[in-house]
Length: 328
Image (cartoon, rainbow, N blue to C red; front, side, top):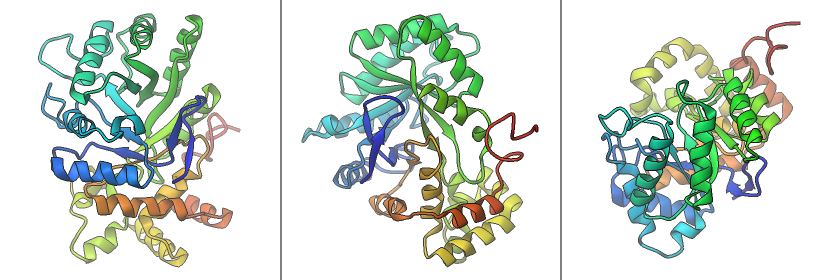
């Protein structure tokens, strides 16, 4: 396993992050336990979840599964850098969602209880709140840090200017502020390169890409369809993406075959080579899928390969950060 620091912090995390969104809805509890055990065996120490995962309002199904896994002991909790999130709807009353100080503090207490732990290593805001002042958000986070219930704070799905706002407010309070930004980022979705990634690099935030294979479209979807699989990638948003980008995906899978690597490994390896990226989130539904994902760590893409991938999936505008991406 390869490790790196999470942004500007001294915290060491694996270069792939175990996403747990499937635990409960897609993956049974015993299978979820097996995946987490295998992750530790393979050196993956960075786990990501959220209070809303499990998609039963207020239940925190996925967090509960992780908590019961921790409760088995054996050093499980001590070995894991645990990340969860706050923002989503956790009840029907007005203050059971968002980023008010009231909800942040209560949601943290609830997550700690479900996760059966005393501390959340990385507490992430799942979305920006346009109705809550940063002074209120940081006051709540500072309280949780002072109490030892949270160690680091991250964001998710923020725009670049939101990162700037957050850090400016934190600096005024002499608070560490954000240490990471979790955003959708893959070969087919590159708009974060315009402002989010440059802002994150400027402020020393680690980028944690979610949906690194764009719902399976970059994981060999056409080959799997021929073999009778890829059901997940042929429905919903992924199905629309397949229709719109079929030619590029066909060329991508052919190019991966030329390289001698699985398309999923190439897609993850591309992200691992991007500036500012700490750890793409992988979301295996089985222990075997976890093992397969780790193959990306052995893939090294040279400049010629990276240029070809840019041709197949062009960056936004002229490429790189704004304003140069759209102006002279």
